[in-house]
Amino acid sequence: MAISGLVLAYLVFRRVLDPIRHLVRTGAGVDKDGDEGNEVRSLARRLGNLQMAVDRARLDLAESRDHLMQSEKLALVGKLAAGVAHTIRNPLTSVKMRLFSLERALSLDAAQKDDFEVISEEIRHIDTIVRNFLEFSRPPKLVARPTSLSDVVDTTLNLLRQRLESYGVTVEVHRVKRLTPINADPDQLKEALVNLVLNSCEAMVEGGRIVIREEEGVMEPAGRVVVVRVSDTGPGVPEVIADRVFQPFFTTKGEGSGLGLAIAKRIVEEHGGWITLHSPEGRGATFALIFPHAEEGSWHRY
Ligand SMILES: Nc1ncnc2c1ncn2[C@@H]1O[C@H](COP(=O)(O)OP(=O)(O)OP(=O)(O)O)[C@@H](O)[C@H]1O
Ligand SMILES: [Mg+2]
Image 1: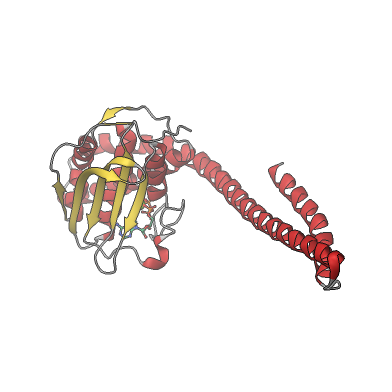
Image 2: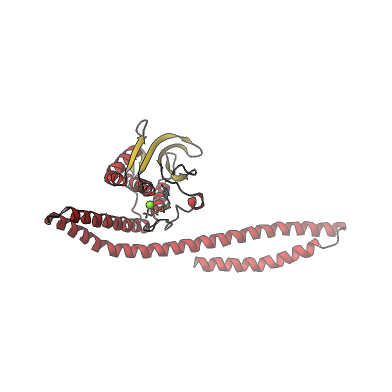
């Protein structure tokens, strides 16, 4: 429906454009002297401007048609992914439960315990991917309440303590005072932060350090903002891919879904905020989550 509208508009433009182009060409070649010549020249100029405006509109049209096709494609992939994820989820849950009770019932030697550990870790990985797919295609509604991002940082680090240890990653939190609460959904913000911290861990295969900086201040044109920056000592994001990392399904990892940053971006934007990436060569990556104070931010609910 929308595409056929665009095609129709394109055809109309073509039918209007060609005669205008012809007029401009003939107008420019008319006798240079006398009133008639002036009038024709001024008409030609006006038609020339009109032609430029039409050309611009045509470019805009082509651009929005591309966007439309891209988002239709994404919606379709999202639907497919959600279907598959949903189907995988039930058997996965029962595998997890059986494994848990088996582990408790059997008396395992050290090597078998190790096997169990590896299986559990792999299942957790699949679970994360499935959750990401579902989260991406069916985002839950925001349940907002006054929330300090400092609490979100603490909860996230508590949740990830074991994973951080297993990656050999240490975390430093730079906090001057607890961040002023904003109107936000703490579970969703935690989800965004978990994705950033896990990405940093995955980037630092040999272990490393994550620094989380909590800041508060004024940033024009948003006004008062609260900011959480996550920096790591990994290899950073190469410049050639920096503007693609937030796109859904973009990944450089063999087993990644490429949804972590897309989900983080969407969550932050739903809170009226934005996410930035700073990655000077050889100095790790820094992602910042920036939120305007509630009275200054604009809220979006989808
Ligand atoms: N801290 C980081 N350091 C270096 N590269 C990063 C970092 N964070 C993200 N990236 C790059 O951005 C890409 C996209 O990240 P994103 O979290 O969206 O997906 P993913 O991590 O590949 O997959 P998933 O999150 O589903 O496991 C990554 O594949 C990686 O190339
Ligand atoms: Mg990720």
